[in-house]
Each structure stands twice: as structure tokens, then as C-alpha cells.
Length: 344
Picture 1 (tube, rainbow, N blue to C red):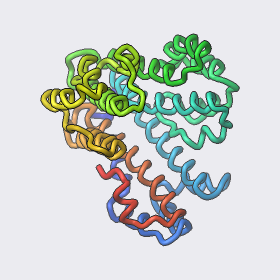
Picture 2 (cartoon, rainbow, N blue to C red; picture 1 turned 180 degrees about the vertical axis):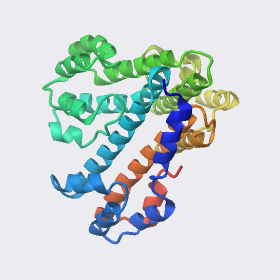
Picture 3 (tube, one colour; picture 1 turned 90 degrees about the vertical axis):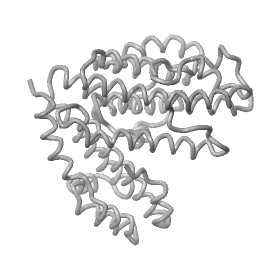
Picture 4 (tube, helix red, strand yellow; picture 1 turned 120 degrees about the vertical axis):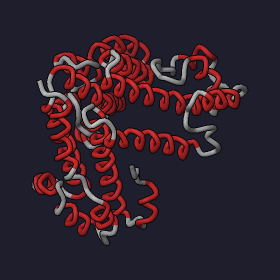
């Protein structure tokens, strides 16, 4: 059974194909979208770009190329492992399955077409492009749940459970929160144990849950209509290392928010009160989380750390390339784009 020493040797070879600072600057400095395409074609994304350009044009071709490259990357890493290493790697990748499933559910809820939905997903993990397209072409959310169950996906049971309430209330947010809770519980269950690799995965998902709860609490505290404590509890996700339900309620109540922020920092959360700009605050949290995760690439050479760090770097690169592509079409200045990029 391959261990992480073997897996990491393969991942290090893949790391060499990430774009360096010079290549990113060349893409940022492209004077037009056509120049951007030419520069991107000279990178490891070139093969997927050429294939995409035989089917479509413009941003759609870039998005397809980046998505297929990222999907191929994640599937390759999945194939390196077996047994517990593979289970932990798949648990890491489940965050992208959750994000893509939410896109599909929102699309079905609002009546979006299959192609519109596919433009917004980034296949990774267990849900490949073929699987996501099958989900996206379903007529409604119950049909999506049926396909997900046929795929024996870990998120199929909670989707089936939440479907009953959704069909009565059409509360999509409630359904998404239900999925989020089960995602967190599933990853924490897979990462049970005192080993180094389990501890790393558990720490990652706990940090992710804490950040999500802090973002949610900050929004609730500033909502025009304050919800009562019971209503706010439905937005809380258990499993974080720092934010428990009591602290969440403090943070989400205007009268006690300042007390909550002091307690949050005292418990080791890296950021204090958000100030006036919640969007900037959320971006700061996302960057801190991405940077701390990417730094794991330089941690234990025999553990899952390198896989975690590499996947973060690769995802970050794809997100930045999508941003640069859009900026070349819209003519946004390089420095403004750089400020919006996630530089890890």
C-alpha cells in the first residue's frame, strides 16, 4: 500500500509544473485577451486550452481548460494512494465536491440551464466533470439527490435527509446548512485518531469551520432584522476548534459582539473585529486560511502536509488565472488585479 513518502515524491514532481512568478507576470501584463491566450498556451495548461478551443471560444475556453486541468490533477493525486492515505486525501477534496454540489442545487432551485451551471463548477474530488454534468442536467433537486445516491457519494445521505424539509419549505439555505454540517462531520470522522496525518486533516477542517462560523456571525450581527437566538443557532456548524455555539451567539448579537470578538482573539483566532468592510474582512480571512494551508507544503516530508500544501497552491493558481483572464477582457489595470489575487 503506497504511503505518503511515495505519494509526496509524485506530488513534488507535479509541483514543478506550477507557474512561477515570471509566468504570472507575463500573463498579468498581456496587452489583450488574445495575448493572454497565447501566453497561457505556452504553459502546462496549453494542451487543455487547445482542446477547449476546438469546442468553444473566449472565456468559456479558458474556464474549461483550467477546470479540466485541475480535475485531472486531483484525480491523479487520488490514484497515488490506497487505504487510509487515499481516504484522507478524498476527505480533503470533499470541500470541492460540497462547493460544486451547492452550485448545482442553486442552479436547480433557480431554474438555470445545464451549461450555466457547468460554467460555475470546478470539478475535483469524487465528483468528476462527467458526474457533475449528469447532476446538472437533472430537472430538479429530487432528481439530483437520486443521481448522487446512485453514485454512492458521501453527501448523498444528508442530501436525501434534507430533501424532505426542502420540499415542504423550499428553504435552500436550510438544505445547504444541513449539507455543510454533514460535510464537517464526515471529514472529522474520517480523520479520527492521534496520528500526524489525521491531526493535520482534522486541524484543517476545524479551521475552515471556525472561519465560516465567524463570517456568518459577523453577517448576522449586522443584519437589518436581528434574529432571535434560536433562529441564529441554525446557522452554526459544530466541529470548530475555537468557535463554540455560545461564542457564536455572542458574536452574532450586536449588544455582545464586542465581548465576543475579545473572547475570540483570546482563544487564538488570528483576526479581531471586522471593521466597516465585511467583504474585505472575509477576504482577509480567506487569505490567512489559504496561506497557512499552503505553508504545509514545507512541513512534514513524510506526511499528508505536502499534498495539502500542493492542492492549495494549485487551486490558488487556477483561481488567479480565471481572474487574470477576465481582467484581460475588461481591460482592468495590472496593479488592481494583483490586489484581488490570492498570493500564497
